[in-house]
Length: 173
Length: 381
Image (cartoon, rainbow over all chains, first blue to last red; front, side, top):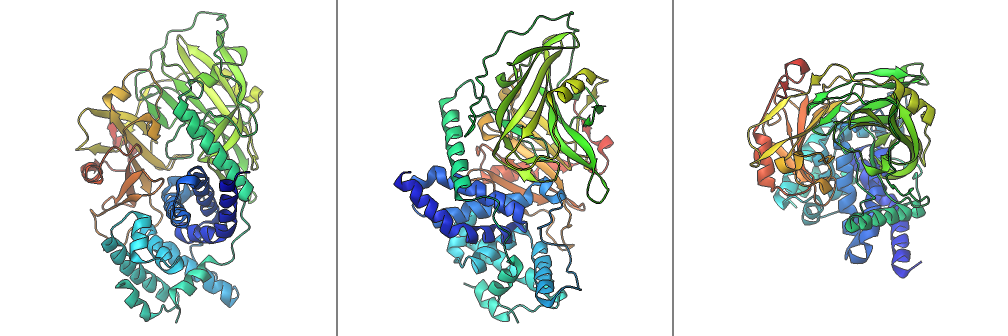
């Protein structure tokens, strides 16, 4: 095993969980998320020696792959047991029920807006970083953040979940 | 009152165990590197035969497997025909067979048609755990137009005769893309073992049945070589049916022509989308098999119409596009909601030869037929 491969192995071991979470929140399906992460990391492996910022590169290809998974026609038709459910089930325990209501709301946020929200607020990326990852302008990221938050706030309200108003400041960042 | 970070954590919940480990990812990376190297070398023995179309069709690319070498696809001389091959004529973009069954397997109506081939899924019918009828994708039947030679990896192996005409049966390794198996499990870019049966259905015309028989993941239904042979024996050409497309492009690069159609309606059993591909006329002409959705096949513009489970909100802009790089670093795509429908169209340029401005201009020039009435779509002349 050469040094480069050992570094790659350490990188994947350290980042796999967070990349899977990033992909899942972007596409809403663990199976699709795992496909996206596996495909993206195999691409990173090929380019490992030439990539100067593997964290950024991995986030970019994983998010793009996860968005692509959402857009695959067959994804829309295949019922996956671990996908975001359409509605919450009221007879579950509070924490599980809340999770399902949150997932139901997230599922209805358009994929592009959801990706921006995930990058900004889950991956803690700046507007500039999210713009670079998604290949969009900073203005688009700002407007998508604003729209995504508004959409999510509205959808959560229908599930009796309130989103912090302080987030309005984030849309101006 | 929640912070959004907390809500996203709540939504993520507890992740299931990953279905792969670091070793699997490294092995996949090594396979990818070998494939890229192979493509760079341009070896004639590794001709891409990927059916990279949207939908559930199995897509394959011959390659060197990580743990099992591909049998060298030396093309053997075909066996001598037992009887004269019937003369056959198939026009481009014309479906020439319909659904048929043999044994426990069913060939669905062909969904993909180009100037060089047409392609159908093969399924097994079964009952799911709830007793509901379901289908399991097990393979494909590809019928090449007379004069078109199938990829070399199908033209070697055990010599056979089907309907008195020569052919080959073999077992080989392949990379499988966008494969959905009988359990609805999706696999992508995995190495698989496959059976193929190629035979001449008419003078200078070849048909190929190809089925995955071994995957790293479970494979609840699979065909044997005998099953493939039974389907080949049951195959016959039928009345020609010209393909139709539900869109017209008002603007395309000069000299580009229709190259491929995938999907015949949005209610078919196996392909819930319609994909129409245009490419330079030089790429469309001739007898070289191209799939156009693959960047290695050169410039093309790919239109995919999909039915949206969640319709756009009533106040959604009707002509606004969303563009971005989604499937790779170089694959730009733009999408539009189709006004007053629950459909959307995705326009992409796999080879990344068109600018975003050009791609948008092409997408904005589209007009659509009534997507819910396939018999009113434009017929290909």
